[in-house]
Image (cartoon, rainbow, N blue to C red; front, side):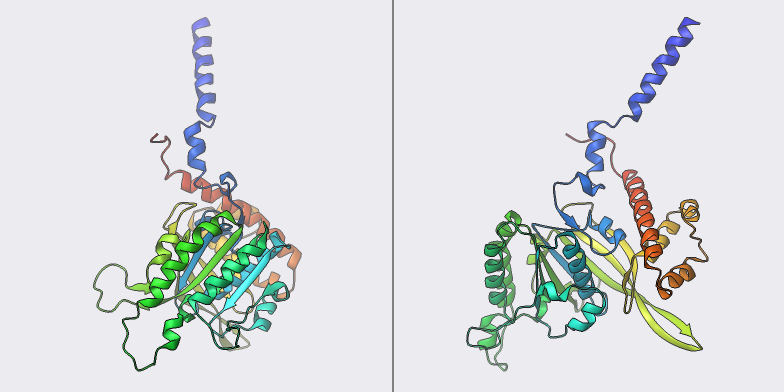
Length: 360
């Protein structure tokens, strides 16, 4: 009898020891828990995308968003601006719009705080066009000097719309290898990366993509401007258009959004090569709730969703009803519950792919 009691006590001790988090297990949670990191994050506007990034966009780092047309590159910059402003109302947001395709009224209708954002004019002291890498370098340097500890979101939209000063002087008919701009970009990032890390600036660079001609294997797309961002950016987030969303009202059909796949091919603050799908609804932005529900359904979390009143067959109508009827409070409450469930499920899944012990 005494022997059985001793064996049971020993088993209980062993079981409780297994439940306690060991130092190596705590190290594993670092890769999937943003709160464990000594960085300041702000949301991208989509909880699922924040988890792909390892916590969201972060201060003191350079971020690179790469994508084809109509994949939400500028939209992510706009939603990032909203969440940055909500997190740090005293912070500085500077938006360098080099493509001459930005509509402040459209951005304001989506919720972007345009009145609190600086939109600099890319001109020389003489008033001439100066959409160049050199101008951006000087402006970032000047911005860093005046921050004095304040957080800053600096957006360049887009890198491809910038020239360099040598190119502006060159005659259009003159031949060129086109490598001068890439060299200037490499020099700019080398000289800025240390100062950005010491500051609380988040530098977001938007890049367009180009086709690789004659490629038969490997990557078929590339960004313009050289490979500098591959090495200096904390995140290289690639966006791909995977479909359109249609809706029929009173017999009339319209395209009301697009499906986008985001893949983080480089991540220095989280696990790389994670991806997620989300919808962009015209006039609304990233449909965070639909992205969360569809991901949870794919992860076989039907029961927790039913507890929230969400069904596989009825979630589209439910979300549309909440938006169309203006039920903002109910939608935000559902969003909060979904964010908690998505975060917990994501961590559970990712932990199964991580080693249970450390190498060192």
